[in-house]
Image (cartoon, rainbow over all chains, first blue to last red):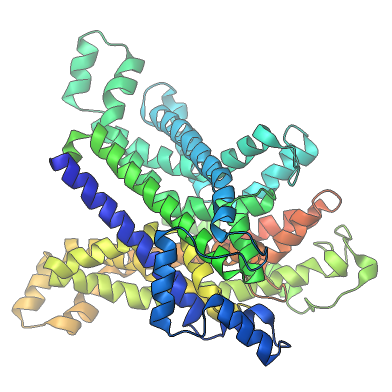
Length: 310
Length: 257
């Protein structure tokens, strides 16, 4: 019963977040200074053309009517047709772009979690001896270098000079392209995880239960991986959850850099063309993705750490 | 620690100031198509970009404009966030929890989506619009820090003494609590400004930035487009973003020491 209530409360919170953002997009596109029809058609448009477009978009109706039909469209996942591609539903463009971005984000979180946690264990544990400070220094260096700077430089080195990675914009990049993009996106997150994970591991390093495990004859590596790591996963998950927003921004930059199709590319194209239904759909989808993943991180945190559940 | 920080900051500062001083007198909008994608030479130390624009001029103007934007946003964030967080911690109770939660939400929220929402209302975004968008979220880290710092300070003896003397409300905040948090806030001032330099570059890299192209992001965008035959443009763009954000962050640390 408590579990059901907890899941219900989370779902409600997530739905409220998505609704709030959808409302923000709606009003940003209509209420803020700037006539959407004029933004779309430019200064040379005639009054007739402007009126026709306003009728298509429902802009000539009172705001509350527009908002009601927007909410209805949101509930039925039908935000109307794309303005740039006539006869294509905005939502179908969004659902076509969603898998690419989800794959990129999921793969970078997975890479970052594995690499970051391993680096944290190496930086906190006794495996590297005095050299372990270098792990921490590398993490600091990476997390203070902007992704925007090192991603193009790394791409140039790997794709143009060494030719071991596909070039940006290569349509046959396939898995290699995904791997390169998600590794680059994962690096700052991995550095964050390494730093926080190291601090969390050092907190439990002197704990009695580790001494007890060693006394029972458990090997050093097993003590760290099986006994010290689980109580430190909470802060690591918290870092991942707090960096998801930055990850999404990074995904947009990388999609642009590698000319990969995806939600970010779709948003930028829709923004450039003022394709309002698509822009709304893409922003809401990205926000929903963000909210769902964050709720999932909280749920996993509760599932593996009994201290969070009460 | 302090002296190492200063020693690290000085060479960066000299390089940045030197490049800006050399480049700021040049015109970032003068085009000379015969010099298109020229590699670095003595008269064009950073080389030339698309349509022969001098990259030293472009970069130094872009750095100045970006740094001014970043400084303004960070100052706005400090002025809104620090009193808010400190007041929340002094008030305690529901207000404190609400501000704490709001900081959580704002800091985790994808700022790119917010920027896209707000910027879609204007035809061509300029730096004022960008400053507005960034200020919407820039207060959160300052509020969070002031909140945490005030939680420690509010039980300090000198705050209790001030309270016992009858100092209340805003006066307690301005005269007693905030000065005690200033050092940590100054460091945050630097790292917020550094993040803003990168954000502005990122937005103009993906095409949401100021039109006209005098921005670090558009240098990088140019560089990525001509990566195969003129890699120096991309190297100049990427390194100038890195160096500028590092310089701004270490400026914040220098205030601290």
